[in-house]
Amino acid sequence: MSEATDLEQMIEGMAIRARKASRKLAAMPTAAKNEVLLDMARLLDERRAVIQKENKKDLLAGQEKGLSAAMLDRLALTDLVINSMIQGLTEVVALPDPVGAISQMVKRPNGLDVGRMRVPLGVIGMIYESRPNVTVDAAALCLKAGNAVILRGGSEAIHSNMVLAAVLQEALVGRGISSDLIQVIPVTDRAAVTIMLAQEEHIDLIIPRGGEGLIRFVAETSRIPVLKHYKGVCHIYIDHSADPAKINPIVLNSKAQRPGVCNALEGLLVHRDIAPLCLPALAAELQAAGVELRGCAESVRLVPGIVPASDSDWGTEFLDLILCVKMVESMEEAISYIETYGSQHTEVILTENYTRARRFMAEVDASAVMINASTRFNDGGQLGLGTEIGISTTKLHAYGPMGLEELTTRKFVVFGDGQVRS
Image (cartoon, rainbow, N blue to C red; front, top):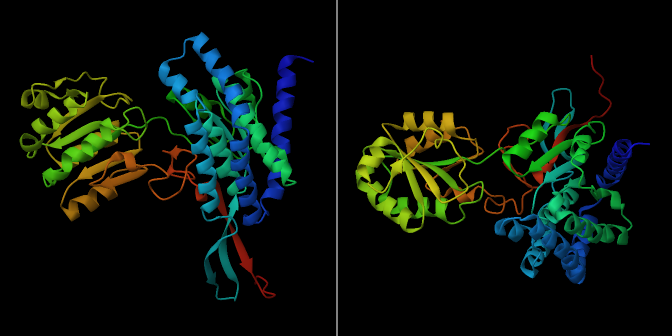
């Protein structure tokens, strides 16, 4: 039997076992799920030395491969990172369990009571890069929402992901629960991803987290529905009615607090009427924070420190201290620009005009539209979801940060008393 056939059988077997285990999990009481999550938190603390020993193998291999300092930093399971994973598990325990909740109950004219019940999706396939803490975050959210999960992390984190999964599985088995609910694909062969994406009979949803190249590959290859998030090209539009006191803090926070994340600001649109009043001082603050400004001809003329932008700069996700600046004639022009260059992630208007704010909110298509607030708030924790499994910039079936509720769907439930259809 060929290696390819062996790999196919292994991954199909994992998916079949996950499906079987998910059916039992769907009916598990909230208290039982919370108990195992707390056991996971305790075991992560107790197995800290073992986890870090395995993580060191990945770090040494990464150094030999020449991974960047930033990549190695994301890979490292320091005490701080492990403490954060433990805290994340306890936070998931505290979150309301959506499974089984019935809403929109209505009585039909024939006496039937019809409602919608929250139910798990079933089996989630998670494909991600670099950060091994995603293994714990994803497993915790999927478990609380009643789903089995198959995890395929990056090859650079294989030892870390395997030991974390072993700890989580130990907690499951300790409570008499199948370890098949949380599985990590134990090989680095890239063919494993393609095989996983063909398991449409056993996996219900694929969630990729990583660079645009990975997500496009998954979306183009998968036979299973994919929740996509290609990139975060986020904009702030400064309307002529903006409060000058709010502009600089919001823009600085959006761009410079953490420039390498998907909810960081990449494009600044400034109404022509307010630009002379706000842009020079704003540009000075941004430049003092190390931000390189690339702008349109008008902004370059207004602020000497802004360099001319190239055509390729507009709509680029820099993930760096680089910001595009464009002056616009109207809110309509700003909305049109966002429609052309945005990525449906996060869009912000700074304005004190309620009517204009509501119009911007209604007409701009993004997973989060904000008024007078930083782009950095488009995050599950900041929006009250607890932790998140990712941010979806597609609309089916979730849009924006995905918490517990987004890892479920709804089915109709009907309560009758002998009714038959005439």
